[in-house]
Length: 178
Image (tube, rainbow, N blue to C red; front, side, top):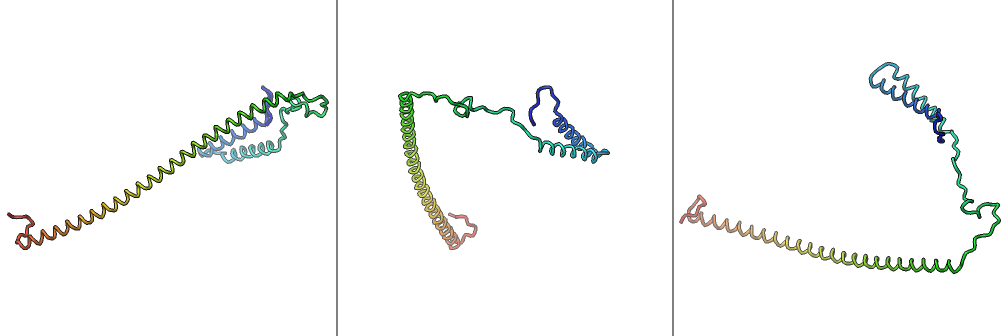
């Protein structure tokens, strides 16, 4: 909707508010189980639908248009003046200064890329070292598990031998008698 002057009454905005208020009061009536709730919903929603229809076909006009010919007089079809004279030496100085600045920025960017490349290379080497360390840890864990299994087997054999010695000796209680 176009903005109205301060203090003027906007009928469409008023109708929006009125329809919304009727719908809200109708919802309250519905929640509380009071009479005429359906009728209030019908009136409020119909009001909203009509307002949406009206606002959907409302033609809007731009508040202000930009006059680029004020900034660029060459855009005005009536313009017959001369273009501003440009000093070629000044343009070349600005061009060379900008080119030198650009070259400096490119060199700084190149240095940054080289440092980034070195960091990535070091990171890759560190990842390889971590992988090698993990492999060594896995190998040591497997060996440790094998040695524990071997120790367990030997302890079982020692226990069996001890029990056989106890049976030969005649002790049934599992306690060594001296």
